[in-house]
Image (cartoon, rainbow, N blue to C red; front, side):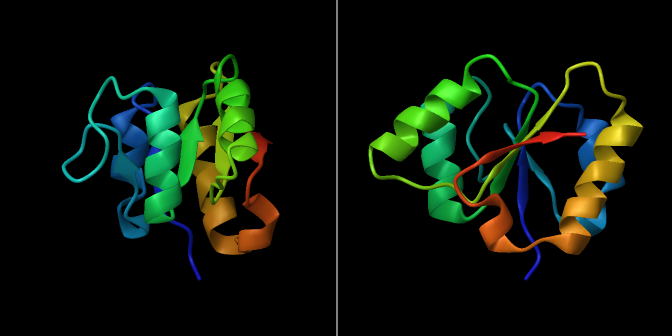
Length: 114
């Protein structure tokens, strides 16, 4: 089973464009949460739709995930990049995750990459 990724609105659309075969979605695209959606609502969406959230929000996302889990909710996973990583590095890491994915490895946790 291959993962589905939802990119945070602060990540580059170039990542999505370079990973077309993986059907990566970006906040603000049709059928996903709109731009400006609060993090707790994004977590609810990824849970309902079985997407791994990809973000560079290391400031508030850990707190939002903790609150989400304490409420008895779950997420397929969160991948969190450093804000200073290159788009090329982000793409390489997402390809690696996509090719080696096992659901239990990412369920309900934030994986910090690279």
